[in-house]
Amino acid sequence: MHKFLRAAGFSMYTKKKDIDKLLDLLERQPSVTKCVQVDEESNVCEMRTEVAPGLGISIVGELKEEGNFEREYYFPYLESNVVGSTEECSVQRHTEKETYSGMVDENRVGITLIFYIQNFLDFREKMLDKEHHSRIGSVCFSGMSIGGKVLLPIKKSQKQIQKAKVSAKERSSLIEAAKNGDEDAMETLTIEDIDLYSQKSHEGRSLLHYRLLLHALRSGVRPVFHYRRNQRS
Image (cartoon, rainbow, N blue to C red; front, side, top):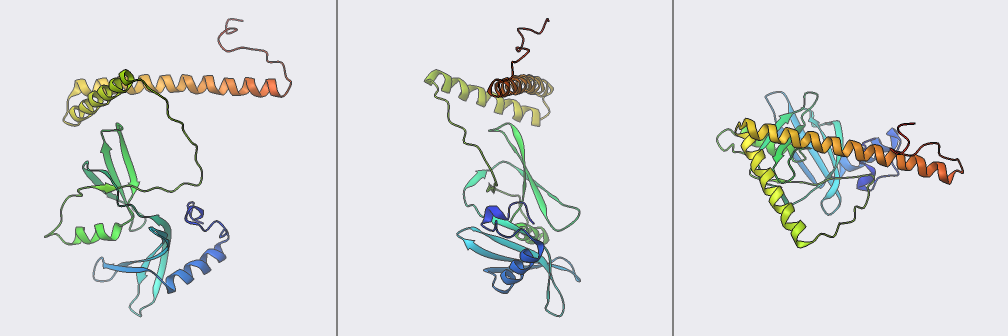
């Protein structure tokens, strides 16, 4: 079972035989079918069945000479038309099958975003068409989840908001400089990342200790230590 099949509304399908029956049904009534001839002997075909606006199941395989479709794998998809990034995007093909990962260095968040490319056949066609092949101009992100947490916003003053904007702009400039080979910028970013990791690791240990202490109090067990205060004993 695909990890995010339940996120597309198919949580009742947990057994392989039931999933196979579902895929057989979807193959008979696809919303969109697309095939790309990879070379003289092989092709890649995708059948998409939409179950809600922009949401559905994609089945990928090969169309044989006899006209029979041989299924290889499937995945739930969620389409998006909102541009999430216009930074330069590089693409890497997976070794085991005709799937691709995209990678974008997103300066706004200061990290490299790695993602699965859903419209991989469109990309494959562009790669085959060498005359009109061009760089990827923009990326639209979408995501699925089987769980989550609500993070409430923190109210900030105008001074804090302005300070955050200046910090974000400075970090973006450092990242751009590091891309161009500026060693000082690379060193500054490395030190910042180490400090951030150290800070978050410390916060994680404090939170873990708090949870253990709270559990002990709720269970009626007398705690035998307190963080930092009794470290010397």
